[in-house]
Amino acid sequence: MLKNLIIIILGIFFFNFQVMADGHKIYGPFPITLKDYSGDKTNSVKYTGQMARHVLHDSLKALVKTGDVSKMMAYFNGDDGLEIVAPKSKDDFKVKQSMVAEIGSGNLSGKTYKGAVAGWGNLTGKEVLEHMITKAGEIDGGFDPNTGFDYTQLISKFAMGAVFYNQAANNYLGKKMEIGQKPNNKPYKEGAYYTGKEHSWDEAFGYWGSAAHALTLTAEQNYNVAKKKDMASADYNGDGVVDLYSEYTFAHAYYASSYDKGGKTNYLSTVNQAFIDGRKIIADANGRNLNFNERTDLLAQRDIITENWQKVIAESVFKYAGSTYKDIVKLETIIESNGDTKEAFRTYAKHWGELKGFALALQCGPENLGETAVKLNRMMGLGPVLLNSSQVVGIDSNGNFIKDQAQEWGEFKLHMLKIQKLMIDEFGVTARSKDQLAEMSALADSMGSSDSAEND
Image (cartoon, rainbow, N blue to C red; front, top):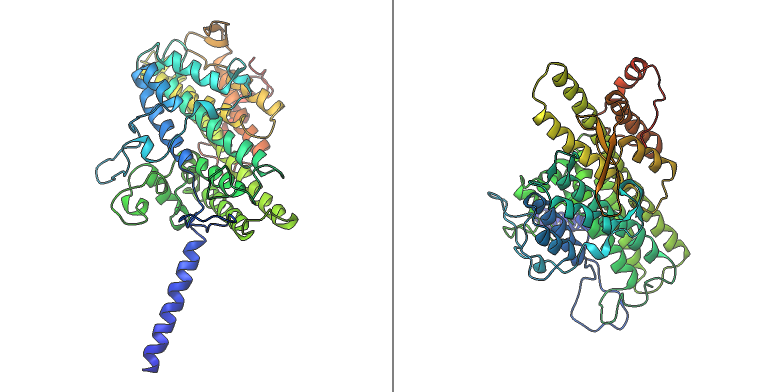
């Protein structure tokens, strides 16, 4: 009898320990702390609009190849009554929602970076995406061989930075974390059941794109959820469907998992833990404004999030600079043997588009990158070097592209390696996928200079 009692007590202890441990691994629920709230809500976490925007982005990306500008703009503007184009159910990976409104409401256009984008004609972030969408409507399949622009990649990679990274880092973790902005002793807005700081923090987490239970999974499992290859890992509550609000991996959280599964980094778990720890600090304030120590601790978690988020984007710039370098080497080999360059050029354009999109996204954060941004934009160019030795170098007042003679292939190839080195020197990237820097010294020597001129 005593033995059975001990077993029962130990069982209860370990069960409670597991619940407590899991509670620190999952984003939410967190209690209602708003004073004088008399409704029936018990969980103060809400970031439905952010997850709706992830679905709008994924759907927009899937539509680029159709060239249907009106439909692309409908998703960019978050029109009513939109079906989810992506992500959709696949084989045994069953998605819960079929309409965007089942998740939440919102748009991409109103949340896009409002600063000038130096790497795309000094247009605002919204104007850049509108320009890209318009241009995608002028060609077939989302790819323009005359400019080398892959609009599926350009639109998607830039939008993730210009909307998600920008809104989280500049707004919800930036401006709204300031004293006097969205105070924690008042509702976020009239009628809300969550405080100003609670909801601001939640919305930033939503823009990150992680499943709420990501810390209960390995990096590879999170990655496979985004690839729709692991239903068991995605379906945390076991209801047989994947809830796009809380059980799916989107955007930069997906890219974080892609680097982390290589074993050199822990971006996803680091960011998610900081989000959870920061949210707990806010919840523990119990509906009052944070004191100095609490605010200091909260901002420390904020800095962990924004620094690692920036690194994830920088890792992506590093990766696709390496991929573009390898594509150029392959193209050179094909050209030398008078082979067919069509397929290799298409791959090169895709990788350059990803490089360009991520590089522009990197410039939408709270830090003014200054000289780093200038180097980055000049070395990769406004457009990729084309096979006829031309290159897009500008955008005229009517939105048309201006082309001119391009830099030499060797110089452009060297610039890809210099971009990789820049990501190490300025952002400390450590995953370093597609690292080609071992080729840098020999390439520079073969060109007669290690300080090749940068492209304007």
